[in-house]
Amino acid sequence: MTKGRMSVITGGYGYAVLCRVCGDKASGFHYGVHACEGCKGFFRRSIQQNVKYRVCTKGDECLIMRINRNRCQYCRLKKCLYVGMSKDAVRLGRCPKKCKPQGMPIPSPPKSPSGEYIVNPEESQMKMEQLILSIHEAQKKTLWDGFTFSGWSDYFPSTMNRNGCETQTKLITDLVTNNFTPSITRIIGFAKMIPGFLNLDKDDQIMLLKGGSLEVLLVRLAHVITVKDGMCDLMEYHKEMSEGGIKMTPLIEIIQDVIEFGLKFKQLELTNCEVALFTAVILLSADRPGLRVPDEIETLQLQVVQALQSQILLNHPNDRLVFPRLMMKLSDIRQFSVTNSDRMINVMDSRS
Image (cartoon, rainbow, N blue to C red; front, side):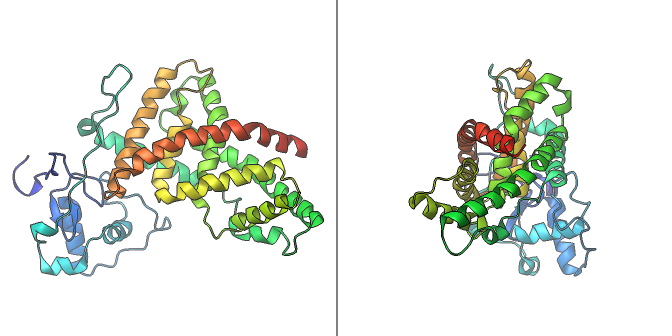
C-alpha cells in the first residue's frame, strides 16, 4: 500500500476495494460507503458548503467513473447519495469498524483459451473505463423508442371474440413490423460505435450483425418490459383466445417468448450501462458460424466481458451471483434467436 491518505484498503481476502461512486480504488469507509479520497472530499465539500450544482444537461444519466467524475458534478453528487453516502455522517465523522461492510474484489482479468491474461486491470483501468463510457454512450444514441408497451392494451377489445382477435392482431402486426427495421438499424449503428468493431474483418462484421441483431433486440425489449405493460395484458388476452380454439399467429408467439424472457431478465435489475455492455458481449460472439478471424473477435469480447463484470461488482456488491446468472442467459438468448429468426422473416415477408 502507498503511504498516507491515499492508501488503498483491501477486503477480507486481500482484494482491493472499489469506490462505490466512481469505481476507483477506495481509501476507506467514508460517510457510510467505501469511497476514494476524491469522492470523499467532493461529497464533504458539497454537503458542508451546501453547493447547488448546475442541473445536468444530459437527462441526469451521466455515468460516473474515475476518468470523468469531475465532468458533471450534479450527477456525481446524485451518485454519492444513491450509493448510500450520508449527509449526517459528514457531521458525525467516522463509522465504527463493526458497521463497515465487506468490500468487493476487483474481477480477475479474463484469460484466452491458452491461459494467458488478456487484460491487466492495474495497467489498463483507464482504457477499460473509456471502453465502458463509449459503449454506454453508443447505446444512449441508438435506442429506439418506437416500441412503447404502455399503450398496447388499446390494441385489443374488452369483449373476447374471434373477429376482434383477428382485427387487433393485424394492428399489432403493423405496429411491430413498422418498428422492426428502425430498431435493427439502430443496433447496427450501436455495433459500429463499439471500440474496435470497425477494425474487425468486414465480412466478420456482417456475420456478427446477422447473428446478433435479433438477440440484442430481445435484450433491449426485455430491459423495458414490466408486468404492468399493455404487452403483458395482450399476451393474457391471446392466451384466452388460444384456449378458445383460436391459433396464435407467429408474431404473437414471438412476442410471448419476448415477455417470458423479459420478466425473468428484469429480475437481475441491471443498470442501463450493464445492459449496454451485455449487448456488446452478445454482438461480439466469436462462435458465430462463418467467421474468418474469430480470435480477434474473442479478444475484443473478453475486454467487454471484463468491463461488464467490473460494473456488476460495483453496482451489485451484495449479490455476487448477478454476473454468473447474466452469463447463463446467453444460452436462452441464442435459443430465442434459433427459434424465432425464421418466424420473424416470414412475418416481414408477409408484409412485403
